[in-house]
Length: 118
Image 1: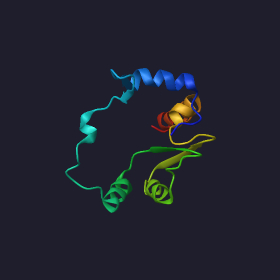
Image 2 (image 1 turned 180 degrees about the vertical axis):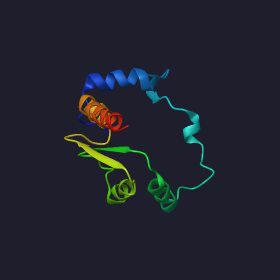
Image 3 (image 1 turned 90 degrees about the vertical axis):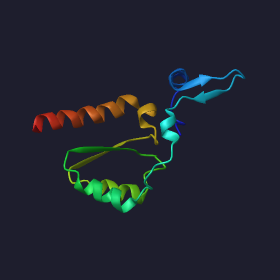
């Protein structure tokens, strides 16, 4: 999911996010709680109602080439009452790996704006 990420960056991620098995393969580290089934099934309408009820400033950052920026997801973001959307050019879903500096700059601008208003 990160074809535009440098090999050096991906290799650094391996050390943080994976463990080497005895047979030489790698396995992602993860919190086993993330594999537990949810006691409540996902309900898109309930989630959209939750988003519509949020009143805090919210930043939505899109990777311009993300395969997950679907009309359904875009519609959910539009439910937010105080939303700022930004797009990082030339990157996909893992924009924080593909363009960390540009992604951080978007976040910094948002935080600086929120501080100036508050």
